[in-house]
Length: 65
Ligand SMILES: [Zn+2]
Image (cartoon, rainbow, N blue to C red; front, side, top):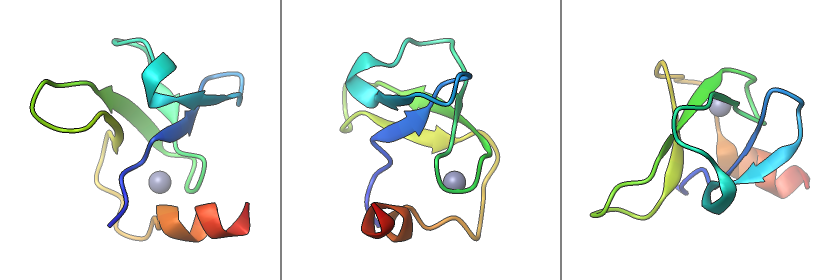
């Protein structure tokens, strides 16, 4: 599964994980659920759903674009 590298901020502007600020909340551009940025040392930076969303498919959204 592809990592989520783009999400919306509270103004529904697209934000790249590289520009995401820690502690802020973001919104999944696919399922509109809250997301949090994961910017750790070990893994590639990505957004993660705050609560697990079983029917969110980021690939689908990317293909729509
Ligand atoms: Zn989602």
